[in-house]
Length: 272
Ligand SMILES: Nc1ncnc2c1ncn2[C@@H]1O[C@H](COP(=O)(O)OP(=O)(O)OP(=O)(O)O)[C@@H](O)[C@H]1O
Image (cartoon, rainbow, N blue to C red; front, side):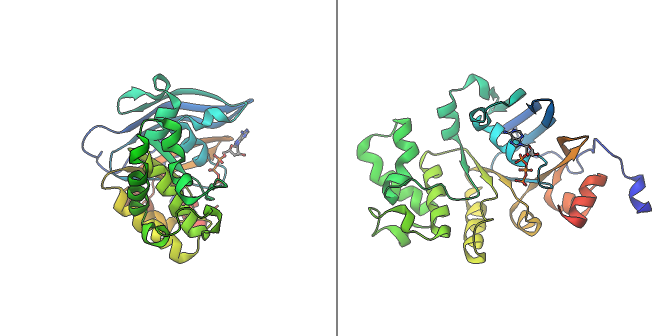
């Protein structure tokens, strides 16, 4: 591949102008270490508000690990050391109560996480845990969240039924409603459509595009066409010297159409 030899190895400069306004999330010199191995090495990122920020890159590059650092979920994994900082709205996340932080920075996983109880109680789970919303407002909170997740019409007459009776696509939208019920500013999504059929995938993608009017979305995806459909900005992670690194950050079309780093070029050409 002679044409690739002129490309810089790293670091690659962003090829787009920075978005206006202060970032909602700033990742600074973040490292995650397991034993002697860096799962993430020296990650620096700015994530602008009310945009979809996609994390792409080959399997094992550290995308999910990075996502879990943004709301301190990483701390629930034993035997990992985390150093560096993440600032949310200008304040270190380490100066914030983890439960409050996870309400403001919610997460949606690859597989819907369903509790063995009703749809209504599933949606209320985070709200009850936080204990801020008065009980009298719970029905309204549930309805609002289910409407925002575009599933109200499908479940409004069966709120007392077990959530397990919903299809997987419906369960994922119900999980999104659970996240939305806590009124987050940021929603982290870890391959939220990889377990879904094309119709349910389209429903989630449409929701992502609607939600970014009020929320910031950080989306891990292996699906490059999906990244192009929904993301405003992208960061590409790769493994370099056995450590996960962010090798390139740019606005979506620029990164996908003219990647600058050799590893990003290779990933976009050949996938994992
Ligand atoms: N608790 C842990 N202890 C040790 N290594 C871990 C731990 N969790 C993840 N890893 C390793 O860290 C690396 C990054 O994992 P991560 O799941 O973040 O990658 P990813 O880019 O999200 O991958 P995929 O696209 O396959 O989901 C992998 O090599 C993984 O095996």
